[in-house]
Length: 144
Image 1 (cartoon, rainbow, N blue to C red):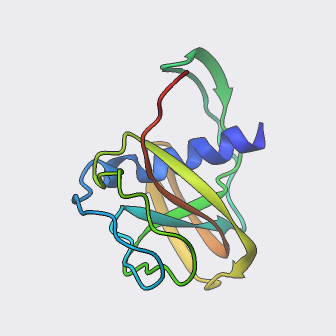
Image 2 (image 1 turned 180 degrees about the horizontal axis):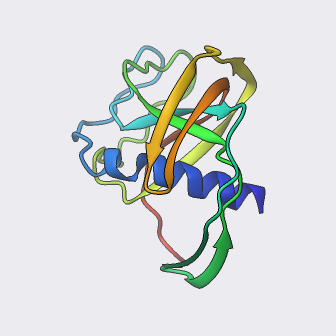
């Protein structure tokens, strides 16, 4: 359930930004810039409880979800460069993703401790950004 809430938070935070991502082409391994739209996500330290229960319909069906405390603030990242790893996926055309895929960051990186006011469709709250724990990128999904 926590993973679903995290994924849902990430989708909410990045859906509008993803739709306007510019297309670029993947490159080689170490030293290569990451051209895909990526976000990194900070844990919200003092998120407010949400009073909303939603009926959500997506490609997998319809279900009722009760929103809990806000958990993540995802911000567009720029200037990402591969430090170590194999060649980036040469078959992926950046800017064409219709989903978001997130990776845990191990260990989580200390956050800025910044106080931020965040507004979304469900309201406005002032929170403390605790730690960077997730990095997300655009993705394509194929069901089998």
